[in-house]
View: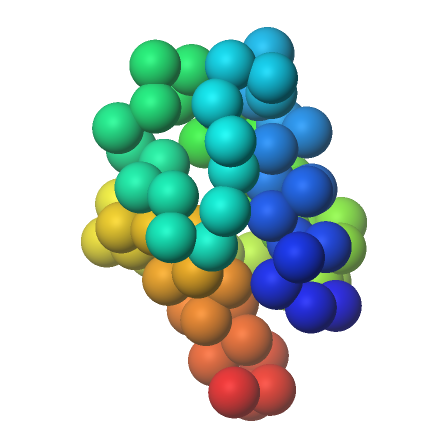
Length: 79
């Protein structure tokens, strides 16, 4: 999976993904649609698509969608 595909999957977890433009540099914690429920949906999406569980700390410590993607790849040993 590349970053473009990941950004699209990430955006799909939001109630209204059309509210903003999603890009690798998007600071997702600052989005109005970012909630604890969205975080849980993102964790489930990551498990489904990468076969790995990401601790909530990784989500909290990631600033951008790219940061999160890089952390996922690192945890899988693909980075």
